[in-house]
Image 1 (cartoon, rainbow, N blue to C red):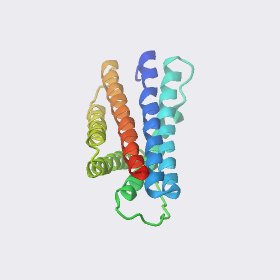
Image 2: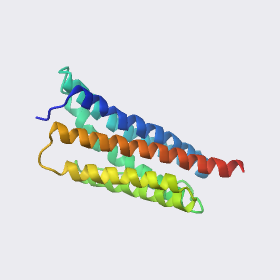
Image 3: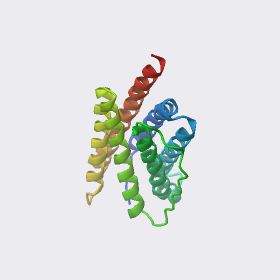
Image 4: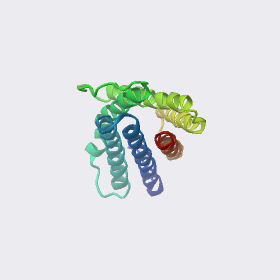
Length: 203
């Protein structure tokens, strides 16, 4: 049974809020560059990711306070994050294209549990942020690109720590701190990329 402290449980909300801020600016960027139909896919993916992370954080808070142990709030994270990050990956690919495509019909059938979903989630997230890094460099926004790289490195660091056998309170503090730093970097990078697109549209 994992043990959490109240400050650690509260810290779990920080990366989710930071991600939501970054996702807002990413959606605004997609609206500017690819229009509202494509932005709806980005918005749907972002909301799935935010919902998955927030439900997990809420479960952790309720569990820490001794109120309830609602396991579905923790376990549903994998179901929501995998298609959410996949939608963000598709959006990033379309954003990277020099000529936009007509909005495709995306059908995502995810029937396996946890390991395949975790793989889809991780690869899609890394792919999306890798493409956003490429877009930032291409558009001469090096600070945004650097922050996307920081977000990717934090994610890889968290994955490495999560594969460890023992989850102590200290290791969870490190993981949550890395997650918060990564998502804050993502949020600022999305804001900078949005400013880059907005400046081009108004010039």
